[in-house]
Image (cartoon, rainbow, N blue to C red; front, side, top):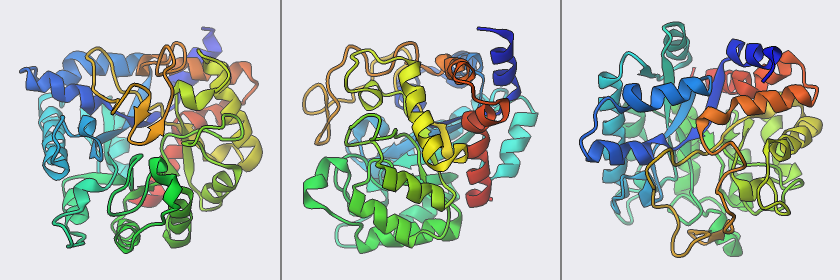
Length: 356
């Protein structure tokens, strides 16, 4: 890696816009490990040059809730683990609830952590009782992002595994978007069906994000975004996080590389400009195996991702590989300023606009 690449990466505020460290960290804490961030993850995060992480602390899948089938309880459990870690690893990480705290954490040489959920099942409450109590309570505990659905159906709306129904957001889902706007929470449309997506576009008064999707025009995967969707996110000032998921990067190549991922950045930048591209790698496993696939390999709650040799593109299966994206952007001729926007500047802009 040449000197220019190293300098750009080092001088940038690098944001990982979607990460599943907690799926593995829970298993480490369950076996008695403590201060796991300081002892294990922080060196890997710093090797990747990352300053800020949007960390998933619960959601619609048991791999997000420390294997609990009780989504509310499991998400509270995972969130509590992270707050425990924040105290035990306070020399390396800081949970942040606004942009000022992000700046302070970076200034102190710490890794800034923002909390989000991947799916709204933990917000549902009792059957036949739609209430915003859950969303508000999680907000008070530090949650600053809500991805409305995972691949399946919940009481907010339908994920991409349920596209046959052409389901839109429910009344509860619409109320969650409005309340998230009021509170100052990121609304994330990743995994959402297109009818539900357009409901969010019509409803949200703040920029929205898609934390981990690529361009369908480059790779025709059901989880990727159409050009029309990309334009709508950009029109509202939002950002799309590029995922390193192999199936969503290339259909033709069994082992896609970072150069295949850059094609998605090229496409989105050409369509709506570089100000709407970020990184959302979606890293899941570091060392311990995390139970993800159900009911069979390649399937995730009704959506088929395929059974490629690796879940991720080559050399980008962990956060340590992110400097390779900087190198590829340099080789593709992007300017220093544009590269810094992709690496984190665009995310920080939206975080500031939404969470304040």
